[in-house]
Image (cartoon, rainbow, N blue to C red; front, top):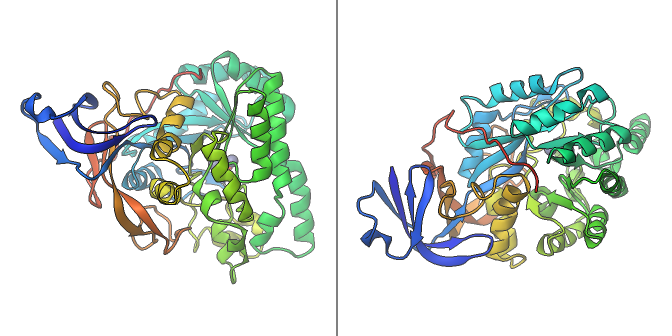
Length: 461
Ligand code: URP
Ligand code: ZN
Ligand code: ZN
């Protein structure tokens, strides 16, 4: 299959120019002017005049089919990656989980089976580690050899995911020796647990108490500790879902010292805020996620962090639970509301609209934050994350002038509400290609379950 994309405004993290792109099979074969006159016959020509031609989005933080809080996230690898594709995301890195007592390979196999035959776009895995006696530490290198080059550790959720500081130190040492990267859920879960128990004992059981028992200082302390432990272990560290200025300052301080500390934030922390928990009745449950939504004043600081590269990546932490059947589990007790929200579909449009259209970030930075930086940090570059000869033809033809209104009535995620219901965004992914195959075109799905391939990622460098 040979496809010629003509006259598009090609944008990468560093370039911006009008050109034609020849795609041969799954890769970009040529970039230039007037390619029609030199490339001979093609199977399809796509006129991209007036459109942006950008690398497919990379969302390095999703949870498809995740067992959590007595239920499982409502998107599986088919519905979730399909929704991602509709929104211009062509790669996800999902979190496999090692549950207690499980060998790491055994845990990884479970996630291979979840994705196989289902994913419509390419995917990689991080591995959440919950049970790491010394005897299991060498298994981390086995994961890295299989292309699972990042692990996630939790400082929160005691009794479920939390691992102690000694374990974090040992895991960081082992991972960094093998070229792995540790992703950290940084919150002081032990203090939070005390606050949660106190709130429940005082009869404070509504959704807003999820936020009120997880102060920004708990996140900042976790970030500080994660970076300090990483420094002692001579290891890089990547802070996931950073939500607030308190925590950002810790990353800024570390980066100012030249430490290899990296961090992502997510659209929910840029566009939604604490007031969503104060809505009538049980509505606030839709926004019960961890960390919680913060006071609005944090948002400007996060945008500053994104501009100044103290935050390198925007992921979604897509972890949807249906409002009616799943969030409902915590109607009488916020601690039983499954933590997480939907987002994989709208990241590109939200960030284009709130970032580029609102003049908070440049077009190049938009591409960098939604695709290139994740590819570089997580060992996928230059196969993914850019438009260059030899790179995978994961390409989005993006209409920068078209508006769309986000709604659960029209979205493709398998969840019965939208966190952004009624929000109008400018910028729509009109044609989405995964390795040269069109998977979405003008609102229609053209891909196939199972076409997504597992990505064996390189080590961190
Ligand atoms: O609330 C969230 N974020 N759920 C997903 C699990 C996690 O901590 O990333
Ligand atoms: Zn987390
Ligand atoms: Zn997550």
